[in-house]
Amino acid sequence: MTTILLTEATARGLLDTISVLLLTVVLSSVLVYRLDTAIALLAVQGGLLSAGAATVALATGSGQAYVAAALTLVVKAVAVPLMLLWVLRGAPVRLELEPVVSRKIAFPLAVGLVLFAYFATGPLVAPTGYLTANTLPAAVAVLLLGFFTMLLRRKALSQVVALISMENGLYLAAVIATRGLPLAVEMGIALDVLIAVAVMGVVSNNLGRTFQSLNVDRLRSLRG
Image 1 (tube, one colour):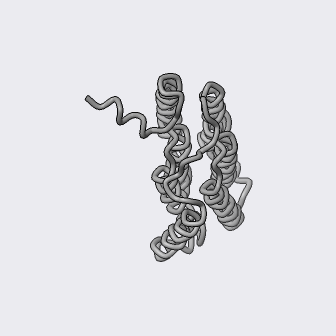
Image 2 (tube, helix red, strand yellow):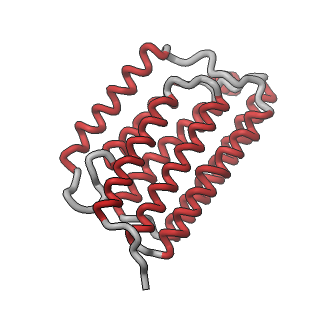
């Protein structure tokens, strides 16, 4: 027997708010050049995603949804940021000093991507379910902003953070479209994310030790 603690209307409102907050955090990350601050914002993203998953669990009453929400909190808000902070502790630099473009150019472009996401996904908003005025557009915008940030940054660790932000956008879209991912899928995603972050963290660590820099441009010197 399932116990539903939230009505669909209440859940829609909460998910709408959470999506806007998540988009705001990711958009502000475009202006952040300190790596520790970027990782802290990534932890905030994980917390908001777990809040969204918990909202779906409360609205559906599914036991698997509760486990998925807890798993999201542990992996995205705790484990991944701690792994990245561990890598940062041994990094020779803690600032993104050489972005591809300046903040004055990057931020208007990022806002343009957000507007594009809302324009492109607006017709897909459903009167029922969790595809509200902000959930799907925000998820697509987070995905685009993560990819955009990867293009802007030269430091390997910054690109890892941006890649996780992209995955967060995909995760939000999947949760709202499916009314909560199945537990098996959730566990698979969590495992993939942890392995990916671990591998990329090791690569970033070795890059810093070898070149005393996290700039990915140094990888060109390894070409034969």
